[in-house]
Length: 286
Image 1: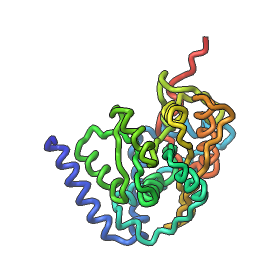
Image 2 (image 1 turned 120 degrees about the vertical axis):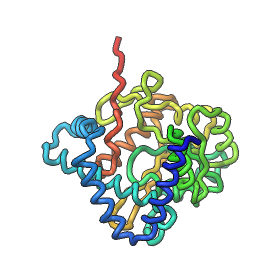
Image 3 (image 1 turned 45 degrees about the vertical axis):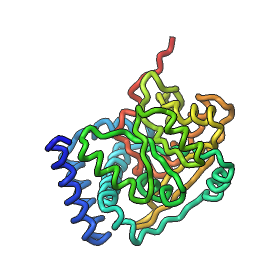
Image 4 (image 1 turned 30 degrees about the vertical axis):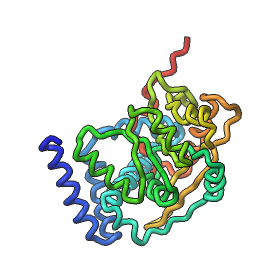
């Protein structure tokens, strides 16, 4: 590991020790100060986020767009602070779960479960719950370029028992999770360039990863979408929803779970990570 990457790991570890030592309310106040600083002084992707919100909600006033954007900064700053403080920040959380009976039924089939989420809500807390629920929960993750940051983030996510498979690793590893009746977690809401399938997202064609649909069609494992929304201070609700497509093909399956994700975002727009270039790739109409 490079020296600079070692320093990154050391700094993140020190940050974890400090943030873990303060109270939940102090962490919350700290995250609000961080959000204010980022909103006013760090403009990276801020304009992109504003464009995305306007595209998703074209009828909104500029005041509502700006209010949602500020709320997004606050929500994800708090998410980040909570994540850094794992496992201490788990203490005192109240988590309600809706749809666990469906997940139980799917697990009883013995085929594993393809579990989709997006960059929405408190996905790290969702991962914590799944890691504790399942005998095997494996998330497909993007490896960070900074090895120190990658090590720290991986260690934090694996605290509840979550396993990792990194992108570009053999597909057999992912199918093995399903073969062992495990839960395979996929984040499927980023632009997939021309490799993706175009489905409607807020009424606009968006290139979306095919992976979840292909895994489902080949393995016959049931597929569901999950989200963890924050409903109050230290309070969260996890919702687990079956993905039911009108037809068993890649496009319809992908559209089905994308529509479910959009429904969540419309309810809690400030809890979506608007900073990605979600509609970057344009549909090539010939």
